[in-house]
Length: 492
Image 1 (tube, rainbow, N blue to C red):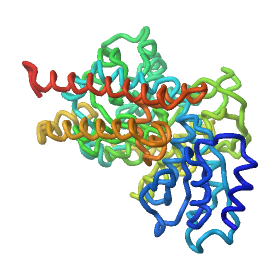
Image 2: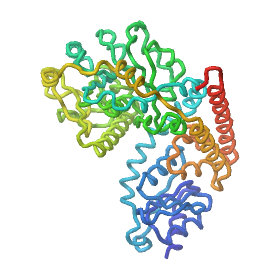
Image 3: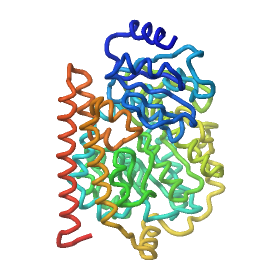
Image 4: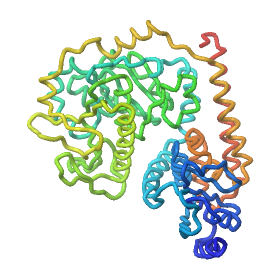
């Protein structure tokens, strides 16, 4: 029965799917594998049925996002994906991971965002790190800070249109709040005369235009908290100090700074800043300007450029609002991050501020956040105890100086080199091998742009292997830069 079903299914497909997604354990897996030797057969199974990859069959559970990371990775690399849903009679009872159609809809949406990132900045991020590696290795990291904002109310300032309504109010309570601003909000804060405690920067492209017309002294007491892959120009910004963090694109470098330096970005600086505020101990975590919706005034998405068709969403007042697919993806990623935080710490509180005179703010409703009227906040804010952010960081570093281990960094390079070598010799080719590596996000950023481009052409496996060799050359360049920083006159 399995062979007949597989024969029928294969005949109905367009020639040559690179990835076949199915569900459960059973004879249908071997039947598909025998008919599609050069395709990856990915089956969503329950945790008890996970097995090591067998040539072109991967049995992956939801545990640790094995299935999700693999399918999302394949989609983000532009690999053709076909769904083979076998008859229930072929599936071993209790071996199915979940409802395939629902999961695939979510993964396609997430992959769209990741694929867009790969196209625009994937390889750029590695090139940036290659240019700034010495400074990154010497940097203070968020993992060195601990909960330095414990008990302090933190306001995350994003750049959506709703920010303008709150700026006049904010000026009256500035000294009672710690302000973390996304970089695109800096010009409006400058015009309002409100200097942030920190600027949070995720972008790998040069964002120096956001400081045009902003004098250096405005940021004299501001900390720049930036992703490891930030553009070299950002390290010259006139902030008082720099603190680095890692997101999925720089996981290979994270062991140098420690596991506590990881920040899930969701592809958006607002999400990054909210997570940082919670991670550093802020309570409650407040926000303004995080609209994630279409602005009729500007004709663009709040907090970012409009892209594609507009999709309907629900606002904080229950009204219909509109957002591009990209902003919708950012919102879903933010909600996933908030859900994970609440799982770890149910007491965590995230509130969007409603300007005086409004019951609710503008923007799209975000699950995991509540609404706090500005008037209620202003009445309850106590004096800020413990000083500004820069003062707290200075005290923390005096109490506990950062410690680094060169061996950890060398092991990271060796591990990444081994993974690249394995992809080079994968029998299914580097693209499928990378997709089946269950979430090697650093490798996807390194190789993804080239592999994504090849997926749109009549490429061969030799072309994919050439892309891997280019990645190996960049890794060697990074390793040399690290050695020069560690062995140079200043040392680390």
